[in-house]
Length: 296
Image (cartoon, rainbow, N blue to C red):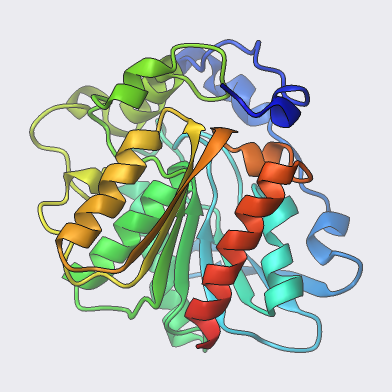
């Protein structure tokens, strides 16, 4: 059951995403304003070029803090470098981080590996430009891309990643977990939408034997040797079981993962209703992990 405070504030009647509806979904996305980015003058921002990838860089006013690479959500098919930052700009104002958000290319026009290559290119650009050893973070599809970038950094010998922060991550194209089948309607991202997103990214390869872990990180055969992870997801989320499974596999490989399943949380609840009590708890817990990872 969805948390009552969140359920009262969210419209769950929207139809599932279809291939024909991708353009409309893009045009109807939330527009994050300059005022939301600057948070009362505590944050400055600039548009920069990361080796051909447009990026938005948020900095604490008057300083440069430890870096975070954040990858936006949107089901692999929507979103911009401003997406999600109406809430996540608080990392800059309250923790003093420098946040870099790439405008990666979107499927289906740019299928795998274009999105993850753009994110990895941003990581290498950061390393060369005084923003080395970032936490790599992401929301939803961006959470999956953040996990993939972290795998690439491990497998390719760098750049160094200090931690991975995976928020309601989209990790598994096979869509076979119980939660993948459980949520067919009545929530914000349902099975049909998920199939649309993965098919846009992978085409006919989706669910087959030859999908790269850099497209779907749950496919990775080995999760040893990764930096500390923070994984969180709502209990009423199609991604719940793949997120729990990914954290569990990190533990099984001897790694460090902190896992939170927020009771009554639908997909993206903390950004849809940021002032709800459950959202505040989730954001505060996430920021505590980020503070420890960046400063201790």
